[in-house]
Length: 95
Image (cartoon, rainbow, N blue to C red):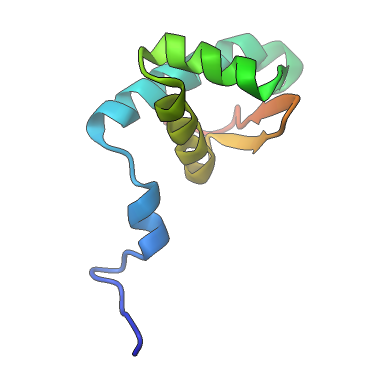
């Protein structure tokens, strides 16, 4: 049995969709990442655990929520790469 998406949305689109609160937090954190990575063309050398801790503190949420928001930001194209030792921010993306 084949499952067809409703109104053009796929399961991945719905799973990666942000709530209004998540979007607000992600937008503010993206602006923060943009300011600290402008001089290095979007590259920030940081361990993933420290990045998640900083994101959680900045967004005032738990580390698990911060990680989920970061992965959704990657899905939206705001973050190009999130590795264990660095992150590459898409500085050309307009939000």
